[in-house]
Image (cartoon, rainbow, N blue to C red; front, side):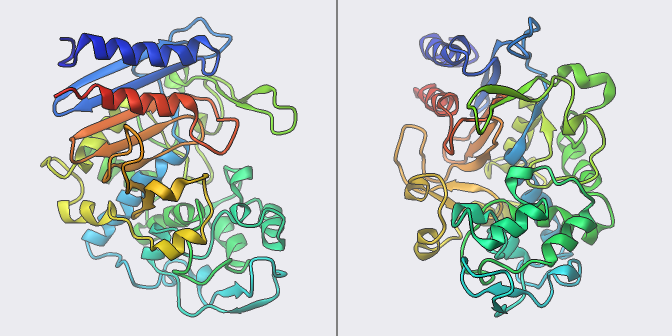
Length: 397
Protein backbone atom coordinates (compact mmCIF):
# COMPACT_ATOMS: atom_id res chain seq x y z
CA UNK A 1 0.00 0.00 0.00
CA UNK A 2 1.06 3.62 -0.61
CA UNK A 3 -0.42 6.54 1.35
CA UNK A 4 -2.97 4.03 2.63
CA UNK A 5 -4.29 3.39 -0.89
CA UNK A 6 -3.75 0.43 -3.22
CA UNK A 7 -0.68 0.76 -5.43
CA UNK A 8 -2.67 -0.55 -8.38
CA UNK A 9 -5.40 2.05 -7.94
CA UNK A 10 -2.88 4.85 -7.45
CA UNK A 11 -1.20 3.81 -10.68
CA UNK A 12 -4.55 4.06 -12.45
CA UNK A 13 -5.00 7.61 -11.18
CA UNK A 14 -1.49 8.63 -12.20
CA UNK A 15 -1.86 7.16 -15.69
CA UNK A 16 -5.25 8.81 -16.23
CA UNK A 17 -4.00 12.25 -15.19
CA UNK A 18 -0.67 11.97 -16.97
CA UNK A 19 -2.45 11.38 -20.28
CA UNK A 20 -3.90 14.90 -20.10
CA UNK A 21 -0.44 16.40 -19.68
CA UNK A 22 1.19 14.25 -22.36
CA UNK A 23 -1.61 15.06 -24.83
CA UNK A 24 -1.04 18.79 -24.37
CA UNK A 25 -4.44 19.46 -22.84
CA UNK A 26 -2.79 21.03 -19.79
CA UNK A 27 0.87 21.84 -19.10
CA UNK A 28 0.70 20.58 -15.54
CA UNK A 29 -1.59 19.73 -12.68
CA UNK A 30 -1.73 19.07 -8.96
CA UNK A 31 -4.34 16.62 -7.66
CA UNK A 32 -5.15 15.70 -4.06
CA UNK A 33 -7.48 13.03 -2.71
CA UNK A 34 -8.12 12.76 1.04
CA UNK A 35 -10.20 9.86 2.35
CA UNK A 36 -10.77 9.21 6.05
CA UNK A 37 -7.33 10.31 7.16
CA UNK A 38 -5.26 9.00 4.26
CA UNK A 39 -4.26 11.21 1.37
CA UNK A 40 -2.49 11.10 -1.97
CA UNK A 41 -1.09 13.95 -4.08
CA UNK A 42 -0.11 13.89 -7.75
CA UNK A 43 2.14 16.57 -9.28
CA UNK A 44 2.51 16.13 -13.03
CA UNK A 45 3.94 18.44 -15.69
CA UNK A 46 5.30 21.96 -15.67
CA UNK A 47 4.32 25.54 -14.79
CA UNK A 48 3.64 26.35 -18.45
CA UNK A 49 3.77 24.90 -21.95
CA UNK A 50 7.02 26.82 -22.54
CA UNK A 51 8.44 26.16 -19.07
CA UNK A 52 10.86 23.57 -17.75
CA UNK A 53 9.95 24.33 -14.13
CA UNK A 54 8.05 21.40 -12.64
CA UNK A 55 4.68 22.08 -11.10
CA UNK A 56 4.78 21.56 -7.33
CA UNK A 57 2.46 20.70 -4.51
CA UNK A 58 2.76 24.26 -3.20
CA UNK A 59 2.13 25.91 -6.59
CA UNK A 60 -0.47 28.68 -6.43
CA UNK A 61 -3.56 28.57 -8.62
CA UNK A 62 -6.15 31.13 -9.65
CA UNK A 63 -9.33 29.53 -8.31
CA UNK A 64 -11.87 31.35 -10.47
CA UNK A 65 -15.35 30.12 -9.43
CA UNK A 66 -13.95 27.68 -6.89
CA UNK A 67 -13.90 30.88 -4.80
CA UNK A 68 -17.69 30.83 -4.48
CA UNK A 69 -18.09 28.24 -1.65
CA UNK A 70 -15.52 30.11 0.46
CA UNK A 71 -17.39 33.39 0.03
CA UNK A 72 -20.61 31.61 0.98
CA UNK A 73 -18.95 30.29 4.15
CA UNK A 74 -17.85 33.83 5.03
CA UNK A 75 -21.45 35.01 4.73
CA UNK A 76 -22.73 32.16 6.89
CA UNK A 77 -20.27 33.11 9.64
CA UNK A 78 -22.13 36.43 9.83
CA UNK A 79 -25.45 34.57 9.91
CA UNK A 80 -24.26 32.45 12.84
CA UNK A 81 -23.24 35.63 14.67
CA UNK A 82 -26.71 37.11 13.95
CA UNK A 83 -25.13 40.03 12.13
CA UNK A 84 -27.00 38.99 8.99
CA UNK A 85 -30.21 36.99 8.60
CA UNK A 86 -31.02 34.81 5.62
CA UNK A 87 -34.45 36.29 4.90
CA UNK A 88 -33.86 39.93 5.78
CA UNK A 89 -33.60 42.43 2.91
CA UNK A 90 -30.05 43.42 2.02
CA UNK A 91 -31.11 47.04 1.42
CA UNK A 92 -29.48 48.44 4.60
CA UNK A 93 -26.03 47.42 3.33
CA UNK A 94 -26.75 47.54 -0.40
CA UNK A 95 -29.06 50.54 -0.93
CA UNK A 96 -28.32 50.36 -4.65
CA UNK A 97 -30.57 47.26 -4.71
CA UNK A 98 -33.56 48.86 -2.97
CA UNK A 99 -36.85 49.29 -4.83
CA UNK A 100 -35.84 47.08 -7.72
CA UNK A 101 -37.50 47.05 -11.11
CA UNK A 102 -37.85 43.77 -13.01
CA UNK A 103 -37.96 43.21 -16.75
CA UNK A 104 -41.42 42.40 -18.01
CA UNK A 105 -39.80 39.56 -19.97
CA UNK A 106 -36.14 38.65 -20.45
CA UNK A 107 -36.37 39.90 -24.04
CA UNK A 108 -37.91 43.23 -23.07
CA UNK A 109 -36.11 46.56 -23.47
CA UNK A 110 -34.37 47.57 -20.24
CA UNK A 111 -36.97 50.30 -19.66
CA UNK A 112 -39.91 47.88 -19.92
CA UNK A 113 -40.19 46.86 -16.27
CA UNK A 114 -42.54 46.11 -13.42
CA UNK A 115 -41.90 46.59 -9.69
CA UNK A 116 -40.17 43.80 -7.75
CA UNK A 117 -42.64 41.87 -5.62
CA UNK A 118 -40.28 41.93 -2.64
CA UNK A 119 -36.74 43.01 -1.67
CA UNK A 120 -33.66 40.92 -2.37
CA UNK A 121 -32.49 38.87 0.63
CA UNK A 122 -29.26 37.19 1.66
CA UNK A 123 -30.86 33.83 0.86
CA UNK A 124 -31.51 35.08 -2.68
CA UNK A 125 -27.84 35.96 -3.13
CA UNK A 126 -26.62 32.61 -1.79
CA UNK A 127 -29.07 30.58 -3.87
CA UNK A 128 -28.39 32.71 -6.99
CA UNK A 129 -32.07 33.69 -7.12
CA UNK A 130 -31.66 37.45 -6.68
CA UNK A 131 -32.75 38.22 -10.24
CA UNK A 132 -29.23 39.23 -11.26
CA UNK A 133 -26.90 36.82 -13.04
CA UNK A 134 -25.55 35.54 -16.32
CA UNK A 135 -28.45 36.39 -18.61
CA UNK A 136 -26.41 35.04 -21.53
CA UNK A 137 -27.43 31.51 -20.53
CA UNK A 138 -31.05 32.48 -21.19
CA UNK A 139 -30.84 35.04 -24.00
CA UNK A 140 -27.34 36.04 -25.14
CA UNK A 141 -28.58 38.82 -27.43
CA UNK A 142 -31.29 40.38 -25.27
CA UNK A 143 -31.15 44.12 -24.42
CA UNK A 144 -30.27 43.45 -20.78
CA UNK A 145 -27.25 41.35 -21.76
CA UNK A 146 -26.06 44.19 -23.99
CA UNK A 147 -26.55 46.68 -21.15
CA UNK A 148 -24.63 44.44 -18.75
CA UNK A 149 -21.78 44.25 -21.28
CA UNK A 150 -21.72 48.03 -21.67
CA UNK A 151 -21.41 48.28 -17.89
CA UNK A 152 -18.52 45.77 -17.81
CA UNK A 153 -20.45 43.34 -15.61
CA UNK A 154 -20.80 39.95 -17.37
CA UNK A 155 -18.53 36.96 -16.81
CA UNK A 156 -17.10 37.48 -20.28
CA UNK A 157 -15.52 40.71 -19.01
CA UNK A 158 -14.44 39.40 -15.62
CA UNK A 159 -12.78 40.61 -13.44
CA UNK A 160 -14.64 43.85 -12.91
CA UNK A 161 -12.28 46.77 -13.39
CA UNK A 162 -13.75 49.27 -10.95
CA UNK A 163 -14.30 49.59 -7.21
CA UNK A 164 -16.97 47.74 -5.22
CA UNK A 165 -19.03 50.96 -5.03
CA UNK A 166 -18.79 51.40 -8.80
CA UNK A 167 -19.83 47.78 -9.27
CA UNK A 168 -22.96 48.27 -7.18
CA UNK A 169 -23.79 51.59 -8.84
CA UNK A 170 -23.64 50.05 -12.32
CA UNK A 171 -25.61 47.00 -11.24
CA UNK A 172 -28.19 49.09 -9.42
CA UNK A 173 -28.82 51.11 -12.58
CA UNK A 174 -30.09 47.99 -14.36
CA UNK A 175 -33.31 46.03 -13.82
CA UNK A 176 -33.53 42.46 -12.58
CA UNK A 177 -33.95 39.70 -15.14
CA UNK A 178 -36.44 37.91 -12.87
CA UNK A 179 -38.36 38.47 -9.68
CA UNK A 180 -36.35 37.79 -6.50
CA UNK A 181 -36.60 34.10 -5.63
CA UNK A 182 -38.02 33.13 -9.03
CA UNK A 183 -35.15 31.52 -10.97
CA UNK A 184 -31.46 30.60 -10.65
CA UNK A 185 -28.97 32.77 -12.54
CA UNK A 186 -25.28 32.00 -12.34
CA UNK A 187 -22.42 34.01 -10.84
CA UNK A 188 -23.61 37.52 -9.97
CA UNK A 189 -25.03 36.60 -6.56
CA UNK A 190 -21.53 35.73 -5.33
CA UNK A 191 -20.09 39.05 -6.55
CA UNK A 192 -22.82 40.97 -4.72
CA UNK A 193 -22.27 38.78 -1.67
CA UNK A 194 -18.62 39.84 -1.48
CA UNK A 195 -19.61 43.51 -1.38
CA UNK A 196 -22.30 42.78 1.23
CA UNK A 197 -19.81 41.03 3.52
CA UNK A 198 -17.38 43.93 3.28
CA UNK A 199 -20.01 46.55 4.04
CA UNK A 200 -21.60 44.56 6.86
CA UNK A 201 -18.25 44.02 8.59
CA UNK A 202 -16.52 47.31 7.83
CA UNK A 203 -13.57 45.34 6.47
CA UNK A 204 -12.47 44.39 3.00
CA UNK A 205 -13.66 40.96 1.91
CA UNK A 206 -10.07 39.72 1.97
CA UNK A 207 -9.45 41.00 5.49
CA UNK A 208 -12.58 39.31 6.82
CA UNK A 209 -11.76 36.02 5.12
CA UNK A 210 -8.20 36.11 6.41
CA UNK A 211 -9.25 36.74 10.03
CA UNK A 212 -12.23 34.40 10.17
CA UNK A 213 -11.33 31.58 7.75
CA UNK A 214 -7.77 31.53 6.47
CA UNK A 215 -5.84 32.17 9.70
CA UNK A 216 -7.97 29.85 11.90
CA UNK A 217 -7.59 27.02 9.37
CA UNK A 218 -3.93 27.62 8.58
CA UNK A 219 -4.66 28.59 4.96
CA UNK A 220 -1.47 30.62 4.68
CA UNK A 221 -1.36 30.72 0.88
CA UNK A 222 -4.94 31.81 0.15
CA UNK A 223 -5.97 35.35 -0.68
CA UNK A 224 -6.79 37.85 -3.38
CA UNK A 225 -3.15 38.69 -4.00
CA UNK A 226 0.09 36.72 -4.27
CA UNK A 227 2.97 38.42 -2.40
CA UNK A 228 5.71 39.64 -4.71
CA UNK A 229 8.27 37.20 -3.33
CA UNK A 230 5.89 34.27 -4.08
CA UNK A 231 4.94 35.12 -7.67
CA UNK A 232 7.24 32.40 -8.98
CA UNK A 233 4.74 29.85 -7.63
CA UNK A 234 1.95 31.13 -9.90
CA UNK A 235 1.75 29.20 -13.21
CA UNK A 236 0.76 30.42 -16.65
CA UNK A 237 -2.99 30.30 -17.34
CA UNK A 238 -4.23 29.36 -20.81
CA UNK A 239 -7.40 29.31 -22.86
CA UNK A 240 -8.54 29.10 -26.46
CA UNK A 241 -9.22 32.29 -28.38
CA UNK A 242 -12.99 32.60 -28.75
CA UNK A 243 -12.69 33.53 -32.44
CA UNK A 244 -9.69 31.64 -33.84
CA UNK A 245 -9.76 28.67 -31.47
CA UNK A 246 -5.98 28.94 -31.02
CA UNK A 247 -4.40 28.46 -27.62
CA UNK A 248 -3.54 31.80 -26.00
CA UNK A 249 -2.07 32.94 -22.70
CA UNK A 250 -4.75 34.42 -20.46
CA UNK A 251 -2.37 35.26 -17.61
CA UNK A 252 1.39 34.94 -17.74
CA UNK A 253 3.25 33.09 -14.98
CA UNK A 254 3.54 35.35 -11.97
CA UNK A 255 1.26 37.97 -13.52
CA UNK A 256 -2.41 38.79 -13.87
CA UNK A 257 -5.08 39.89 -11.47
CA UNK A 258 -3.55 37.98 -8.55
CA UNK A 259 -0.12 39.58 -8.85
CA UNK A 260 -1.11 42.97 -7.41
CA UNK A 261 -3.74 44.28 -4.99
CA UNK A 262 -7.11 44.12 -6.81
CA UNK A 263 -9.36 47.16 -6.87
CA UNK A 264 -12.33 44.78 -6.73
CA UNK A 265 -12.00 41.64 -4.59
CA UNK A 266 -14.19 39.20 -6.46
CA UNK A 267 -16.17 36.96 -4.13
CA UNK A 268 -17.20 34.99 -7.20
CA UNK A 269 -13.76 34.16 -8.53
CA UNK A 270 -10.80 36.17 -7.26
CA UNK A 271 -9.00 33.91 -4.79
CA UNK A 272 -5.65 32.20 -5.28
CA UNK A 273 -4.81 29.08 -3.28
CA UNK A 274 -3.04 25.72 -3.05
CA UNK A 275 -4.27 22.14 -2.83
CA UNK A 276 -3.33 21.95 0.86
CA UNK A 277 -5.16 25.15 1.74
CA UNK A 278 -8.30 23.90 0.01
CA UNK A 279 -7.93 20.60 1.83
CA UNK A 280 -7.93 22.51 5.13
CA UNK A 281 -11.14 24.27 4.12
CA UNK A 282 -12.66 21.02 2.87
CA UNK A 283 -11.98 19.24 6.14
CA UNK A 284 -13.71 21.95 8.12
CA UNK A 285 -16.79 21.50 5.92
CA UNK A 286 -17.09 17.75 6.51
CA UNK A 287 -19.80 17.45 9.13
CA UNK A 288 -18.14 14.57 11.02
CA UNK A 289 -15.10 16.65 11.95
CA UNK A 290 -14.86 18.92 14.98
CA UNK A 291 -12.42 21.53 13.63
CA UNK A 292 -14.53 24.02 11.70
CA UNK A 293 -15.36 27.68 11.27
CA UNK A 294 -19.08 26.87 10.87
CA UNK A 295 -21.38 24.70 12.92
CA UNK A 296 -22.63 21.34 11.70
CA UNK A 297 -26.26 22.58 11.34
CA UNK A 298 -25.09 25.51 9.22
CA UNK A 299 -23.06 23.23 6.95
CA UNK A 300 -26.04 20.90 6.60
CA UNK A 301 -28.22 23.86 5.55
CA UNK A 302 -25.62 25.05 3.04
CA UNK A 303 -25.34 21.63 1.46
CA UNK A 304 -29.07 21.01 0.91
CA UNK A 305 -30.59 21.51 -2.54
CA UNK A 306 -32.51 24.79 -2.32
CA UNK A 307 -33.93 24.79 -5.86
CA UNK A 308 -37.29 23.41 -6.90
CA UNK A 309 -37.72 21.30 -10.07
CA UNK A 310 -39.67 24.20 -11.59
CA UNK A 311 -36.81 26.62 -10.94
CA UNK A 312 -34.29 24.26 -12.50
CA UNK A 313 -36.51 23.90 -15.56
CA UNK A 314 -36.30 27.65 -16.28
CA UNK A 315 -32.61 28.03 -15.36
CA UNK A 316 -30.36 26.89 -18.25
CA UNK A 317 -26.78 25.89 -17.47
CA UNK A 318 -24.43 23.07 -18.57
CA UNK A 319 -26.25 20.51 -20.74
CA UNK A 320 -28.03 18.02 -18.42
CA UNK A 321 -26.49 19.68 -15.34
CA UNK A 322 -29.72 19.68 -13.37
CA UNK A 323 -30.32 15.97 -14.05
CA UNK A 324 -27.94 15.11 -11.21
CA UNK A 325 -27.21 18.42 -9.50
CA UNK A 326 -28.79 21.10 -7.36
CA UNK A 327 -27.67 24.30 -5.69
CA UNK A 328 -27.26 24.93 -2.00
CA UNK A 329 -26.12 28.13 -0.31
CA UNK A 330 -23.26 29.23 -2.54
CA UNK A 331 -22.20 25.83 -3.85
CA UNK A 332 -23.23 22.92 -6.04
CA UNK A 333 -24.81 19.71 -4.77
CA UNK A 334 -24.91 16.25 -6.34
CA UNK A 335 -28.49 15.00 -6.14
CA UNK A 336 -28.51 11.77 -8.15
CA UNK A 337 -26.20 8.80 -8.78
CA UNK A 338 -25.31 9.32 -12.43
CA UNK A 339 -21.61 8.40 -12.63
CA UNK A 340 -18.83 6.88 -10.52
CA UNK A 341 -18.18 10.22 -8.80
CA UNK A 342 -21.78 11.47 -8.77
CA UNK A 343 -22.50 10.55 -5.16
CA UNK A 344 -25.64 12.22 -3.73
CA UNK A 345 -24.64 14.69 -1.06
CA UNK A 346 -21.26 15.56 -2.55
CA UNK A 347 -20.86 19.34 -2.58
CA UNK A 348 -18.41 21.93 -3.87
CA UNK A 349 -17.70 23.71 -7.13
CA UNK A 350 -15.43 24.06 -10.16
CA UNK A 351 -13.53 26.99 -11.65
CA UNK A 352 -13.20 28.21 -15.21
CA UNK A 353 -9.41 27.80 -15.17
CA UNK A 354 -9.56 24.07 -14.49
CA UNK A 355 -9.82 24.00 -10.71
CA UNK A 356 -12.20 21.55 -9.03
CA UNK A 357 -12.99 21.21 -5.33
CA UNK A 358 -15.69 18.96 -3.86
CA UNK A 359 -16.38 17.26 -0.54
CA UNK A 360 -18.30 14.05 0.20
CA UNK A 361 -19.52 13.82 3.82
CA UNK A 362 -20.77 10.23 3.49
CA UNK A 363 -17.38 8.96 2.30
CA UNK A 364 -15.45 11.60 4.26
CA UNK A 365 -13.63 12.46 1.06
CA UNK A 366 -12.09 15.74 -0.10
CA UNK A 367 -10.83 16.09 -3.66
CA UNK A 368 -8.90 18.99 -5.17
CA UNK A 369 -7.69 19.34 -8.75
CA UNK A 370 -5.61 22.34 -9.79
CA UNK A 371 -4.81 23.23 -13.40
CA UNK A 372 -4.68 26.54 -15.29
CA UNK A 373 -6.43 25.88 -18.60
CA UNK A 374 -9.85 27.25 -19.46
CA UNK A 375 -11.96 24.60 -21.21
CA UNK A 376 -12.87 25.08 -24.86
CA UNK A 377 -16.61 24.64 -24.28
CA UNK A 378 -19.23 25.07 -21.57
CA UNK A 379 -18.64 21.71 -19.90
CA UNK A 380 -16.31 20.15 -17.39
CA UNK A 381 -13.03 19.39 -19.17
CA UNK A 382 -11.98 15.74 -19.50
CA UNK A 383 -9.15 16.16 -16.99
CA UNK A 384 -11.67 17.16 -14.30
CA UNK A 385 -14.01 14.27 -15.05
CA UNK A 386 -11.12 11.79 -15.05
CA UNK A 387 -9.77 13.15 -11.78
CA UNK A 388 -13.05 12.51 -10.01
CA UNK A 389 -13.46 9.04 -11.44
CA UNK A 390 -9.88 8.33 -10.34
CA UNK A 391 -10.47 9.74 -6.86
CA UNK A 392 -13.50 7.54 -6.25
CA UNK A 393 -11.91 4.38 -7.64
CA UNK A 394 -9.27 4.77 -4.93
CA UNK A 395 -11.94 3.79 -2.41
CA UNK A 396 -11.66 0.02 -2.38
CA UNK A 397 -12.82 -0.67 1.17
